[in-house]
Amino acid sequence: MTLRIDPAAGAVVVTLPLRAGRGQGMALLQAHSRWVADRLGALAPHVPFADGAMVLLLGEPHPIRHCPDGLGGVWLEAGEIRVAGDPAFLARRVADWFRAEARRRITPRALDHAARIGRSVRRIAIKDQRSRWASCAPDGTLAFSWRLVMAPEWVLDYVVAHEVAHLREMNHSARFWALVASLTPHAAAAKSWLARNGARLLRYG
Image (cartoon, rainbow, N blue to C red; front, side):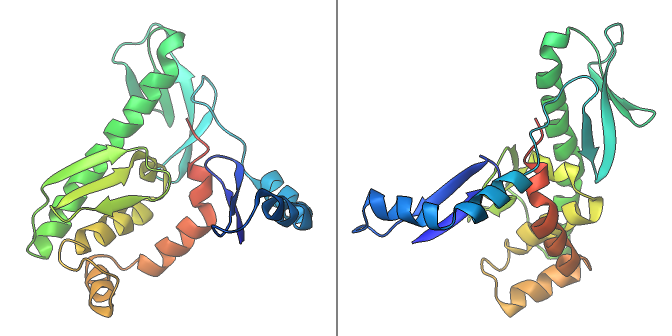
């Protein structure tokens, strides 16, 4: 039996063997109730995309500012993410902007890294993946969470390099990690950053 916290859902996940009953799961929860309470209490609160909310872009905080008379949808100006139009659509516009920004920053990196190792990318998908930051399919399709654009640029670059390396090595062997190291010098630091801060990125939107 295992017990873990899902930071994205803000929930406790109990995994039981097939033969175990519900009562055993409840007993496990009760035995670790203090641990569960501490972990749930430490989770970062949800931050909706709203006027005045502080969000991250490439690791730096930026406030969202509603500019009802502005033109151009969503744009970056003076360190602010400015949003024009009806406030009822602000959250959706900001979410779409983050997805577009992620694609804009990820695509050239992926293509450049792929060219360096003599591979090609079939397609790049930007999703709201919560169980993993990115993935590489056998057909050469790379998928990335748009939330990566909230991480520092060197962390984003590491995740892109990691997935591109899978185009040659679909494993995590020593050869794979050597290939990643040839594409980015930040692998160890970026993995550490994601382990410490990744859950924070899931609270936005």
